[in-house]
Length: 284
Image (cartoon, helix red, strand yellow):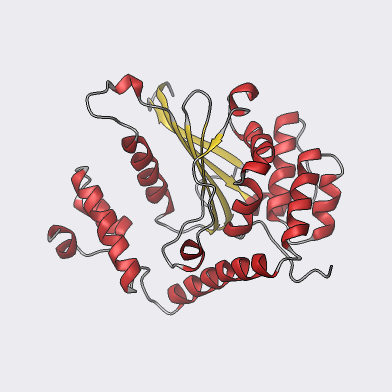
């Protein structure tokens, strides 16, 4: 059967299609083992929390196609791929982490029962917090670097840094494997993925999923809708429009702002993350 289009896993639909389905949980496990300092046997019992691909989420301007999962020890993890870094992204990922954390707090339950929450952000271009391929942020004491708690864990994976390196220079086995996975996600070239897959059974399986997708008219439609959304979003910013100018996005911004206001966030932070004016936030 003839291939209809070429896939890059920087497209969030393709990423979720490869890493966010029950039949590919072992592929996701293999990736997570490279990122997290968690025993493999704990990761092996992961449960996907959102396995569906809704048509509305594919084409809706507010749809976020992230991969959500729960581990055996109740840890909640959210993985999101972002093509381009922006100035609000750090605040946004902290907010989404906080939302995950508070959503799991049951009435009358002690705080020590709260599950650990982890966000993993795979960034295509423009990441500027540091010069690392993989960075992890926690809450630590400023002077002695002592961790207050391990419940806040935010990871950034820098695909642009991987792209800069022509070869894998890592000597540590775990870091070398992570580099290969990020190269597999970052590349547009089928030959590069095939070469990487020669050394990894999980990458071969991921490659097989991609090959099936590339021959499906339905997958082509879903994939290209997400690509169109990314291009449109970039165009809006280029001509000076704010995100959320459309009615649906504006309503989403209001919902986000209301939730943050109920959580007693400073008005200035709410305005920055939701993209609203002080007057709009105060009116909620």
